[in-house]
Length: 245
Image 1: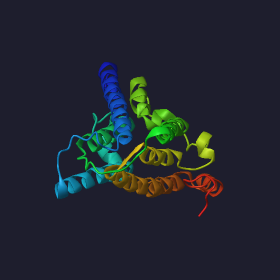
Image 2 (image 1 turned 90 degrees about the vertical axis):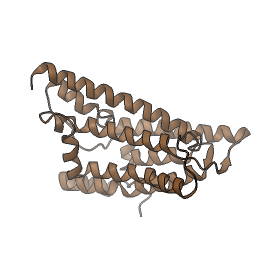
Image 3 (image 1 turned 45 degrees about the vertical axis):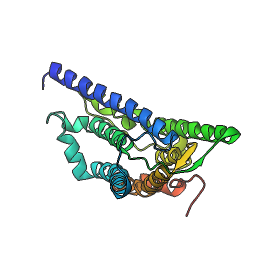
């Protein structure tokens, strides 16, 4: 592919991906802060339960599929053939953002409030909620922002190069646990000042994924890095710092 079209495609994918990322994170913050009352879905009863269950499940299931070998093949086909593999990280990040948007915007709120912090207690929960997001930002930074945000794909295409993923991260938060991104993501689900039945259900479902999902990634790392990752696993806890089952 000639230079002009390649650059245009890289920029288009990059702009679309990062715009989706910013909007998705903003919507997720507001939705979790308000106990998922932001959802535009208007279903009730069994229909709402079925729809919300599908919304809660689609993120971990599709996310896991796209990280598998067959899923990576699908990602490669979502861009022009010559650039599909290089743009796969960008496409993956964009799809993940779209999944978050679909979940929180299409959710049908039950309106059942289990707990809402007030007075001084609310400030405590507000602080915990803000801290959980700062924790997530730090974890994403330590994991490599270009990989986590998908910029590693479109910037490589922009240069006419291939993405360089390097080795697995071991610095920063990765010194105290192997999956700080998943731990921080789970923390954002539990720390908002408004706990509704909806947020509780989503927090349980997605926290379970945060515990189980990384096991597939660890198997890939063991296959790719062998003893190097095996030694890292033996010296650093899985997801809870200081906890070794």
